Image (cartoon, rainbow, N blue to C red):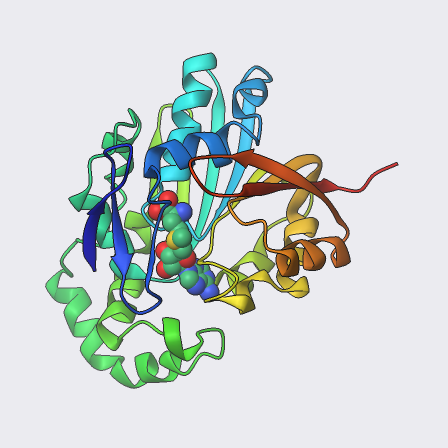
Length: 265
Ligand SMILES: C[S@@+](CC[C@H](N)C(=O)[O-])C[C@H]1O[C@@H](n2cnc3c(N)ncnc32)[C@H](O)[C@@H]1O
């Protein structure tokens, strides 16, 4: 992965496999604020005293960390619960290599996969290597995102490092294919969904009707989903899943994003 400085001076990485950057090159942090935190009404929600956010394809966590900043600035007493869904342990390791101008990020950096296994855990891994191989065959990892054997070992050992609590802020990253891990989430639970996979062109499987149906299921009746893409295919699948969409903000040189809500009369 190669580090790129985006137009607002903030860092992102280029994923050589999909040939896409993790954030908009017009401004990584600007995108987190203007395409996710603002359209999902984070500031307004903070006034209610409690926010639940689902960060789909959380990567380095810019979107959620920015939303936490916005919420705490409006209401320092706000209770915030964030669940991030991410399949690639390597991008989570990269959190340590960036310093976006987001206040909460210094706490967010406690989320890490860097912990070395203790010797008892190493022995456990050695004994259980056959089970690990079985796990690698788990059908929910498509070939292109399948983590290596080493990554699986880290996942098994360090899920506890993927959770943090800082005051009234609770963050948990669930490792795995978001299309699978989302099924365990409660229905009607999230005020905001930040939907940020790679583009519909490179990852059409992430923008299908079935996954949007899951987003519909977990979104509160008053909740808002925001995404950077305005691809018609994505919007059609949102509509088939029961979501009502509209243009999101135009940021930088790109077209509008999309915001979506549950269709309620
Ligand atoms: C555009 S980047 C997201 C950037 C992220 N929101 C951030 O602020 O750093 C897309 C992310 O989707 C993740 N991803 C790709 N396929 C996935 C899947 N099936 N389930 C969960 N995450 C996936 C990639 O590893 C990558 O981190």
